[in-house]
Image (cartoon, rainbow, N blue to C red):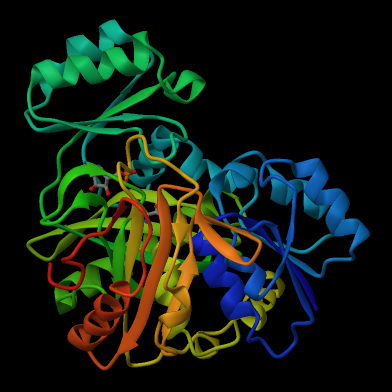
Length: 416
Ligand code: AMP
Ligand code: GLY
């Protein structure tokens, strides 16, 4: 089979790495891929948001399956377009992608189907949002409704910060149309857990859990990023939490069916768990990054087969099996990320990394056989181990062999 993977990051590299091991794979293309994807795929210079260009390519090359990494093309309706052209594509259609494209849409769904989540209100103008601040206590959370590259969430400690955030969104319009609406919600305490589910016509197949680390500095300090370290399985849930999560998944399935949508692809559920009670923080409609980098090395089954069965409605729980080992990823970042950073720094030492450590490239380019940084998140150093301690040890030992100017990474992944 010929597979086209859309995206440019570590998530897409991890998917390509796993699909390259599938028994039916003949060729993998990546649009656009990056420096590392050339190890198992052919990079194609078409942007992930150029839906017409991707469609033409898939038709011309007779692609058997297209896999969509990022949310933008999903929200823009790439799945609908490919399906109209009788092309197989893994991901939700435009109607289902609203679960990531609009925070208000998701909050309304969660409320309608009694799925636990933070209390919220939504607003379309500065004055009404400002006037309602009195109804919330601090900290509170202000979120731009639309897609904001993971930067649309403000945790505000007091009224001054809340007003500043509202001004940025409504008056300075820093998120343009994606900030036309704002959701203000109660701040939830607890610990976070990510659960990705494969969804086949509204039926949820949960994958193993992951623990993401979003803040840039050790001790979960500093600004949020897309995620700079992960391990899987995540924190062990109590029996009570597991029961509650099962109820939530059932509630989501019931909701999807009642809304008369047909969800296919991935539903990524972010939970906040306090006193054993999980509440839904958000939905994403795609694989997580860096969650995929730790899930793929643990997945025993054939990913291509799993995806095809998902689309054919023949997937069963037995198709999704896991290694007992723990996996851990630490991301090497460009100094300055998530704020401004420089690109184009030569990366050295990749050839010295141990054979049992996997390096997924998040943001690199390859020129004349050398690798250079090309993003804020640069490389995911990943390893499996019999436990978190062993996986962590292998990752950090190998990080010491890699270098580029201003390289920065968290030292505490697996300890916190
Ligand atoms: P989201 O994009 O909605 O996941 O938000 C990004 C991050 O902001 C989450 O991973 C949480 O760490 C934090 N966050 C979002 N909503 C809340 C909330 N209601 N209470 C506490 N933290 C939140
Ligand atoms: N790691 C979080 C995300 O992919 O949204």
